[in-house]
Image 1 (tube, rainbow, N blue to C red):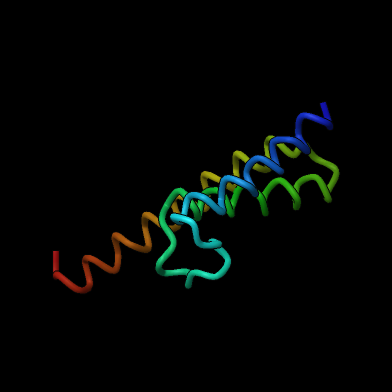
Image 2 (cartoon, helix red, strand yellow):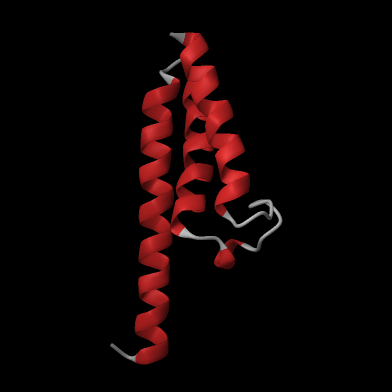
Length: 86
């Protein structure tokens, strides 16, 4: 099971480089990253952190991906409300 978790993390790292249209997601400023890229970065961080704390890497990746996507969505939504007054 650990082998599958490691492969999953490697897959997410490799995928995150292609999601941002050929540029490394780490190079792009935070506000220019998309929701999918933020979710992937959250999944990577969540998996590594949860594994370091002795938990399951898959559960940490799921929580991190959800947190990264929701955070990016809410931040973008709040910015639109401030700019456009909706």
